[in-house]
Amino acid sequence: MQTRAVRLDELPLLQDIERAAGRYFEDIGMPEVANDEPPTLAELARYRDTGLAWVMADDADHPIGYLLAGHVDGNLHVEQVSVHPAHGRRGIGRSLLDELAVYAAGLRVPALTLTTFAEVPWNAPYYARCEFEVLAEADLTPGLRQIREHEASLGLDRWPRVCMRRPL
Image (tube, rainbow, N blue to C red):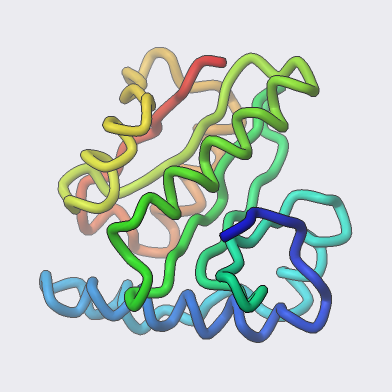
């Protein structure tokens, strides 16, 4: 397996990975999250065009997981990380996060940040195992506050959410 930049022709595959990975939310009573549409092709293309979209590809060079990031308050913010369930529990998500950390360190970015569900096992507890720490409300940057406000406007606060940070 290898981590590499996303190719333009692979953007629909990222949507497929997102839909497949989202099905797990149905099993834990979060159908709204499970049925949420992935980013549009135009949105995915913007991440790709800015160099902030990576895939983990299998031995046949087929994407099996992906990560999207953005710049927020001087840090790199994990917008999305998804792994196709057929390839889950093999360290793919962690490898993508670690690749982002190496990239961010090369840019001298001080940290990675993300927002996630606090009580979903493959969200905040997983990210804690990947060296992310929950941020106290008082430690949220303006950009993270804006992201959380947007998430709340989408109804995601129906379930507890947290901001997390991984110092580099």
